[in-house]
Image (cartoon, rainbow, N blue to C red; front, side, top):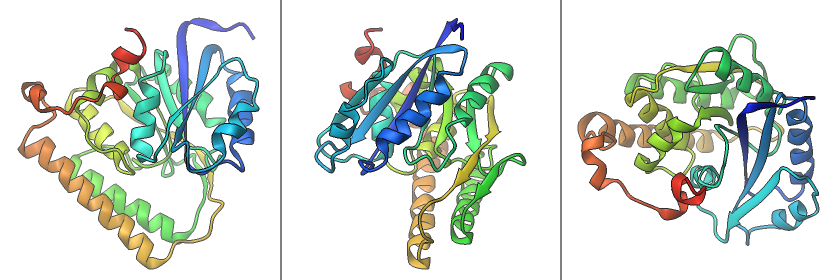
Length: 268
């Protein structure tokens, strides 16, 4: 296929304890990207090099568009994604969770929709009418709880903030990321709410095909996830609406981390 040289795509894959499946995951993503009309790179970021054998498994892959980065100790999914974003070259930057619970063919769809809708962000959504989703009732309850929290507190006009498939225009990330604080599960929530606050409001949902491959959560675990989501949403609400921490006038209060600076690590 003749590639479109107008835009370059970076695909980020955060990895935590995925040594058993990571090679097949990357092959699946690579096969999908070989069929798109853009040049691309795959950046695998290992959230804790000392945790398992993921890095050694990835060294066995001989793919010209693959870059593997990481750091010794686990810092959380949000930190991992930001770390990789800071080392990306793409005009458009996407991330997809390892494990392939979300069909990687969804990458080609969100790339096309970003252009078609002239969007700032496209979010893969379990609740899109065209999504094909197979997951247990306890996960549905957690997802519904997160949806209500994000809508009522943060006015995010999407039905699913947590699915592990999203794509952004580079200028959105360069503007928003230096302001963020969360580095864990709620990273997506903060990123979307601050983007919307700063005027990057063209945020649309895309369908995904998703199949969970693990057992149901206990009620205690599910409740803990919802409570953590509520706690993080309240913290973002406080900074967003009351302290106005994310606004330009509070730039001097933002916490700077050179490792997460997109301009430093890409030479821009």
